Length: 214
Image (cartoon, rainbow, N blue to C red):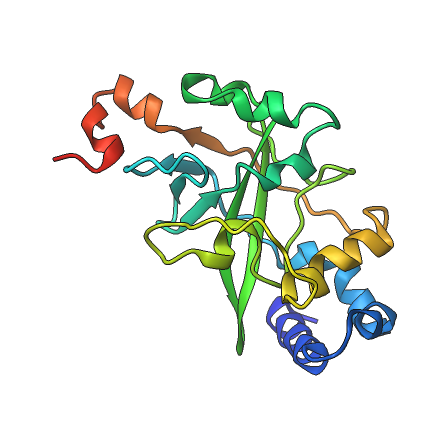
């Protein structure tokens, strides 16, 4: 099947299960197939991310090479960092952000007839995306992390994920039930990340711009 055909079939599956309990979702054979191949629907077009002022410490905003808005998930990246290293990873800020083990970015993604899915990109300090293994990025069938309350301008973080939410039902619960071993993996090219600290060094952005100054 083509990607668009698979997207339509996925949407039909999600809509069929949207009001079903988690236990029903996890037992559904069609959903299990889509879960294992969820990264087929992820976004692999990004080659560059440029941070945008003003500065939001918990959820910085970036534009990609296609002009789309990604939000950096500074809290949820803990699932993509070796155990015990998350706090050290988080404390590397400013120019030292480039030393972080990995960084996680989210893009609001629409499927045919369905809005609320989330493309996820996890970039290692080398610039390579983490597309396999226990720390890999995964496409989300529900709105994830910062995007669950992203207004398009200012991300407002709600860290609580309820079991009634679609992100829990379609993404978190399946991850917990089946682990990462079943995921099909897809290759992705390197990503260059340009932070506000880089833009200040290049005199593209002024320090006053970090807080919306004129």
